[in-house]
Image (cartoon, rainbow, N blue to C red; front, top):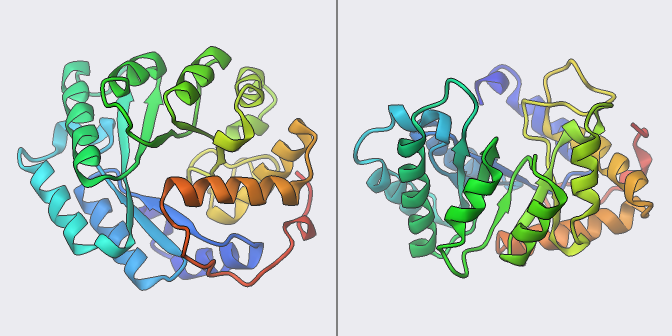
Length: 262
């Protein structure tokens, strides 16, 4: 993302120093998908996802699928998912029919390439799950989840993972915390969604990957689990989803509990 153009190396250094082992960097259009692939090639601890976000689909060229396929061929060794794709029904976003077409086409691309998907579902969780249900066996994660406990149950029942971000640490996010409690640990992922939604106590700052440490501590407290055990379980889930079993962490081993509580 452009928000990191001035200090990307420093952001990555802080990330590795915080104990984070690897990063999934998703694209939101063709240009950022290309940049994500390029960054993944340059940085041992970064892997890429490629896709066209629902907010950006109206500006995508007619041959975007062919271009995404070409990006996959170019960055095949470091591309782990199709994403960020999905539906966004917030007021002012592109036509819902157009979004639906892009979503279905990219789900099919993921199926064809045997890749998981990273799904954006703002104000459209039910609709996203309905579309995904037509792609049997497709793996993926409902990213930055904003649905209900029954939505979590449905997603998990379809074989999907559910990921939560820094907004679950906000005082008004009670519904999000209830949804998190409904997610089986073996399907739970955590993320920063950098540069957006920094967690408490970093709220008001530009979000960055190292801040995920605060989210882990908040979730460990919420679920009454040891933070080390939680982080190991979530890393295992992430590696299984993104087929990263043999990839060793870039960062030196470091105890996540060394860091400040949120």
